Amino acid sequence: MSLADVEYLPETPAHDSEIEAINDEAFGPGRFVLAAYKIREAGGHERAMSFVAVDGDTVIASVRMTRVAAGAGRAMMLGPLAVRPAFKN
View 1 (cartoon, rainbow, N blue to C red):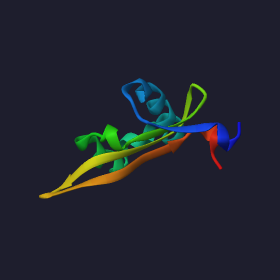
View 2: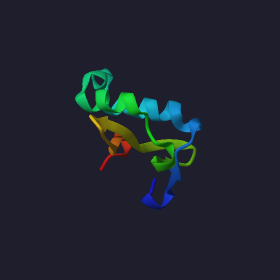
View 3: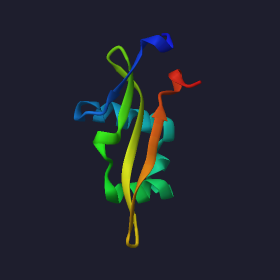
């Protein structure tokens, strides 16, 4: 694979299962107790601002923007961002 082979696409619902697998590979089951995960789980991600990197038909990376709230404040939080281990560096 060459970087020229990688395409960057808007995330769609069809990518959900592959993104979940990438996050599992990258962060493992312990990610569910991390503070960032707890903050993100209440807001859901903004699909229109989330993207995948694909090599052929395989999703190799994902970046999401997630809605967060703290008191009266509202913002977008970067993450999770994950890359399949075989494609890092």
